[in-house]
Length: 199
Image (tube, rainbow, N blue to C red; front, side, top):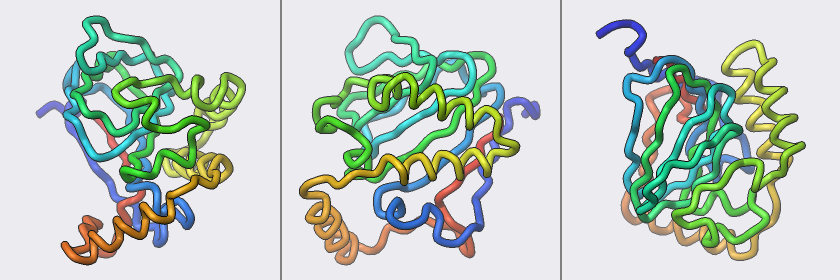
């Protein structure tokens, strides 16, 4: 396989990352850069939400039964999809993102997450143009992927708000996890919080 198509997953070994209070909301933070091994990727319905801050050329998403794709220049927010999504990558891609636990996106939105079901929106629509422009500038000038992930984590902590009912959701999910196993997929000696992907 050519080096440009190789995909490398590197696990961070920083303990306790993401830090509290994000650790109860986020599965991982990631950095993605390079030439994708494919131009399109279909994501099936999944019990997770995601946020992508795009730092490269725009990508395209076809949501659910949409015929046309929509362009996302600054990134996107997707709540738990009930239908498949198709991502179209540019020839060279660069982004940072967050994979949230099923309930984890709610404290970062100013609207009920259910209103966004199967309807991706830009990060600008969620956080506003000045906020995402400033964040993208800070991320673009960071020296290394781990610094970018730290900046993204700090931004999430800053934007975290109280969400009614979230405590009950966390408690119920922990009871379910205790009865069926923890479901923790962290590699031995490492943290699942930060992934670096290179193509």
